[in-house]
Amino acid sequence: MKKYLSILLVLSLILSLAACGGSKSEAPAPAADAPAASDSSEPIVIGSISPNTGGLAAYGIGITTGIELAVEEINAAGGILGRQVEIITTDDQGDPTECLNAFNSLVAQGVGLVIGSATSGCTSAITDAANEEEVCLISPTATADSLTTEDDYIFRACYADSFQGAIAAAYAKKSGCEKVGVVYCAADVYSKGLYDSFSAACAGYGVEVAAAESTASMDVQDFTNQFAAMVTAGVDLVYAPFYYDVIGPYIVPQARAAGYDGIIMGADGYDGVPDYVVEGADLSAFNGIYWTNHYYPGDTAEKVTSFVSAYEAKFGSTPSAFSATGYDCVYMYKAAIEAAGTADASAVRDALADTSAVYECVTGTFSLDTSGTPVKGAAIISFADGGDKVTTELVEVMQASDL
Picture 1 (cartoon, helix red, strand yellow):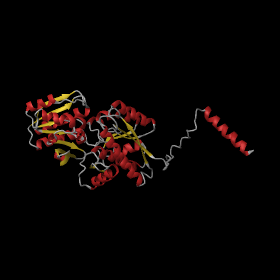
Picture 2: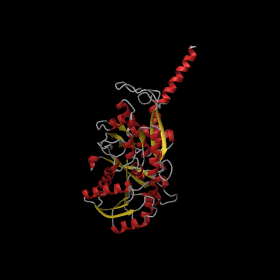
Picture 3: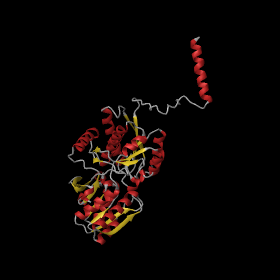
Picture 4: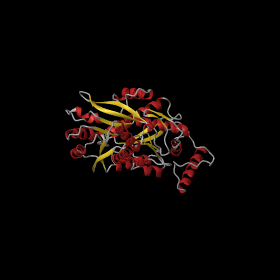
């Protein structure tokens, strides 16, 4: 008899919930002063957005492998607050619309912590949505100044373009350049932002920007006329902030073919150039190519050597700066979650916004400024003809105090 009464009670409860619009997944709200329940068996989920396919796939692959290595290490050491970390990886194909679609997909899955995206153009497509949804966003490599502002949910593991462009201008001055030129993409937030910051810093150093040539797209493949203009202007250095997929096969060889034999200076978008040099190309064209980057894999600092060794053991290749910053993003989240005592997005956001917090990362030891941008240095790296391949070499590391 008790068995039948129990069944009737259960049926009565189900009908009561249905009449009120409830469902099996709903639970009574806790008392206002009751602490939130914490299930240590539930993983901490972090979403990632990066260009894993398409023309910028080298960036996405770098980021996702760096993230994978960090998560593997953290989980092997017991996780964060005793919870394992799980990554949901999405692909934006280097397209802003796809980036927003990827972000919305993660939000629909209940993800409140996101790493992404790689480029400034894609990341700018999701910053408003992240703030509206109160989702924490750390970009590994989106450098446009406008992306992060005070009191929002947007942070990054990289320096901003105002710093990167100023470092390039400082190096031009230090190298004795009196006249420089710029070839950039007027339609791209990354390239245009770097042009603006480089030009402004040159004015402060008394370096003349004698010629500025622009393209309408980052996908242009013919730069002959732009570099012919640089030759005519007689500049000592050309600042060309583009991505690796045009630097290696197009810009460098075409600049030399046009008769420009001076310095070509670039930014972190150059990471990956050696893999895109056309087979049989004259590698001597790559002598005198310099660029700013987030780290140098040959750095002897313990953080760098242990990261590079672990990465090479796992993936069989040298990690790019995108791998390093993706790796750093995970550890930034780890530090913020531990400081907050929870993986709740709003609490993690507050922890990241604490400018007194110090992050000891592969790409440097730093704090975030009030906009959520790291205060750290930049590595200046050169390319050179290595005989059978293009090689890289660290020139120097410049800090904000060097400006």
